[in-house]
Amino acid sequence: MAQVIEFKLPDLGEGLTEAEIVRWLVEVGDVVAIDQPVVEVETAKAMVEVPCPYGGVVTARFGDEGSELPVGAPLLTVAVGSVDSSAATSGDSSGDSSGTAVAGSGTGPGAASGTGAGSGADAGAESSGSGNVLVGYGTGAPPVRRRRVRPQGLAAPAARAEEPAAPVVPAATAADAAPSASAAASDRASGPVAVVSPLVRKLARQHDLDLRLLVGSGPDGLILRADVESAIRSTTEAGASAAAPVAPVASAEPSARPAGERVPLRGVRGAVADKLSRSRREIPDATCWVDADATELMAARAAMNSAGPKVSVLALLARICTAALARYPELNSTVDQEAREIVRLPGVHLGFAAQTDRGLVVPVVRDAHTRNAESIGEEIGRLTEAARAGTLKPAELTGGTFTLNNYGVFGVDGSTPIINHPEAAMLGVGRIVPKPWVHEGELAVRRVVQLSLTFDHRVCDGGTAGGFLRYVADCVEQPAVLLRTL
Image (cartoon, rainbow, N blue to C red; front, side):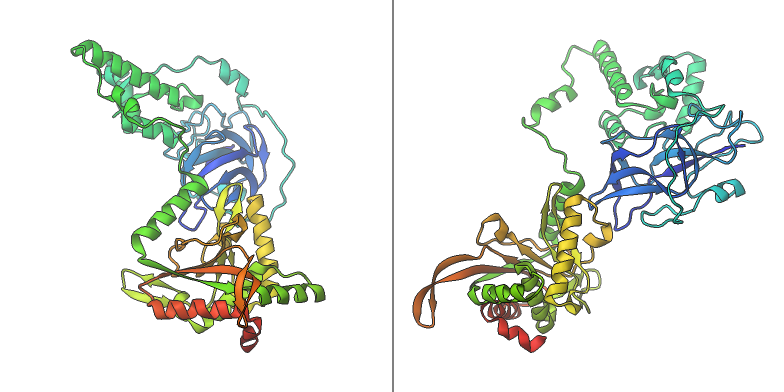
């Protein structure tokens, strides 16, 4: 006897609450192995493949590609165990957001509640699932080649498509329905709501529409956006016919909003917006800057690269930062606002800004204080490639203690960086270009760079920030200064 188990979008870690479906890796009717990736999702931090902790036949999927799902929303249902004539069909899954899926008719002795990925307490569920739902944790079972099966009892999608769509019951007319319809509506009002999309829920909330009074026209009675819009139209028309011929207030809302292209603040762009806004609200930042002669640094880099593996300018600047933070640990800290304490951190996890097609991300070089310039450069290269490919893990984008921002690659000289909350400082580096410079008492053309330090004024005063920036500039102008710390 097969049991249908619902697998929900797991907690992807690092405080993420939602994810966007990028690509489904399985279809309804496919056989999946334990811990086989079933969907590719994009979070505010990275693009990851989500493995299913159960093995069996996929009986239903929830959410279209491009839609956003909150953590805990159903992803798919899997029929585990033996599949026979009484096995669950894709049309029997309720598909609601309560996390309940019923096998077969739900009335026989073989029916199972299937209350979600975390409820497989019976032996059949435990034997067919790894119990692991977090990305990156699995049993290591090799994925099997995907194959489509139609065991007896599993309805084909084409057959389901021929079924007539369920009627939509507008909220405004539910009270006028027949007694039997009212009783059915009452049953639905006390039960789960067959809706998955957060956009549908939001649209219903905006128009004070009770989703429990609707019958969806989607698969398994799923409430679609078209159902909600139809109910809204019915409600508006009913209200207009009963009231005086006054234009509804709601109809004026679209015209009151400014015209123009609208880009949703979600994914990476939304995460950046939230983090920078929080930084501006909570951190009293200040910025100081200085011009430095980078001629000697560029010469030292050329000498290093001629004698061994190439080292980037960013890697050298990162090594300079770790040396400066060892002298000024106040800037490698964070503020515990509730305890009203400054927490000086024991290690340097150095973030660096990387521009990608998905937007600006900040990968983190772990334990940068223990690495030399060559090791830091190799890790920066690896993380940059992963960032551009969209394969960075959430753990590689969080936990930084200090950030280095090389905006000089965009051809600009200076900037006032916004601190990467909850860190205490960020060093910005402009372009390195030939400029007139007084060198050894005479005017000469030198390679000059502008360095900007934005710091949290709660953790230190200008003297400490200025000392840090001056030390960085001294190392840029005279790389031999670094020999004291090697």
